[in-house]
Amino acid sequence: MRAASKVLWLMLATLGLSACDSGQDDLQSWMVEQRAQVKPSVPPITEPKKFTPQAYTEGSSFEPFNMLKLTQALRRESNQPSTSELIAPELARRKESLEAFPLDSMAMVGSMNRNGQPVALVRVDKLLYKVRVGEYLGLNYGRITRINETEVALREIVQDAAGEWIERVATLQLQESAK
Image 1: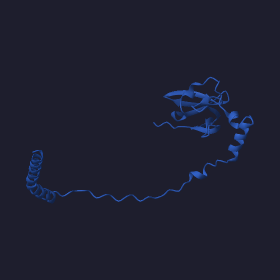
Image 2: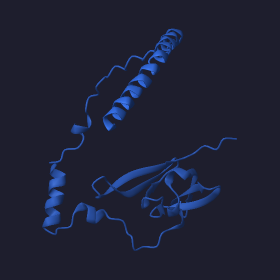
Image 3: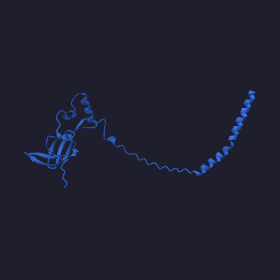
Image 4: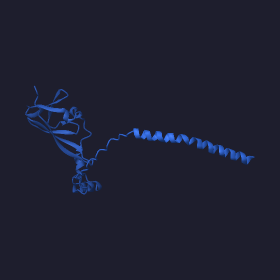
């Protein structure tokens, strides 16, 4: 009896599966119709940009075996003072009021002689300041070295890419006031 019931269930399952096959044809025809109606719209891919290689020019600007760099390294090892130590800014001195402003925010607006010494008039934030040779200006420890009718020359002390202190010359040019 058990074997007969198993065979009966097997026949019913086969019959049930075969009955589902008739709806498959309708489904296939509907899919074909839908594919025929729908046209995909894919935008064309743009052409890739042409690659133009650039020449490497920075290789010649910094030489790792530069004699100046080698002598500085040898001096550091031998505990001799380097030029960087001789040029280093005076960090212990009290800063002057115009050292709180960058040079590009300053403008020289005039000059005069006072007691035989040249004096420049510098405008910062709509205020005028009198400066003399030897005073400090700007954020980079700039010290005034020369004043004439058209410019104020400074010697700034900045760090280079290697962290060494170097001197740099900067100027403030006379600015004509626009009326």
